Image (tube, rainbow, N blue to C red):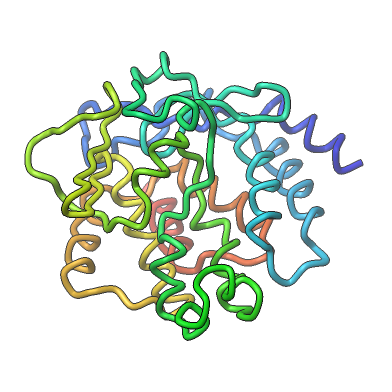
Length: 272
């Protein structure tokens, strides 16, 4: 029955595409057409199906999260950092390079697959725990329940071109002087020497809100400089209808809400 609901929902679910910047740059990733809105019926069907997968679990493991996200993003047309359309190749999700002008920097094979990126890297939240000092990520996954919860938190996971996910690694987000494009037209820059990754403008607020959610939910420590940067990003790139709808689906799948983002989404809804 759950499989039937998911298939039915997939027939009518929207493509979660972000519209390009036009007359209002600060709202660059709001949906621009009613054809890009979830119908209440399809949204409820997909939410019910996703929730049925985890209603008996208190914590979603990273492995389980990846399985859930494949369903949640099945109709989504784009990757997080580059905006490449996502296609299905059997059971695999693959990025369409031509749709976003992506060119592999070095690792063509890895760039040919979709990987699930931790916006807040596992290294960043993990190394703040004692378990990381005693054996790194592998040890934390085994002995620390809080780490497992953070590692599998759907609100911190997004689809990315594999090579970009690997290059971002655990680099901090920041601004890089100039426009050193290394992935074709993909608007993502990386400074390997300084260990900095600069994302495109219309997802900077999404990133900031993810960090603030982790700070509020798990007590993530964020440096003063990074908090200032994220506060600026959060103001310049406010929540969009798409971001709020995706968050609602993740809430249904995870059985808990992102309270930080929910407040923003309620304020946004009042303006519509």
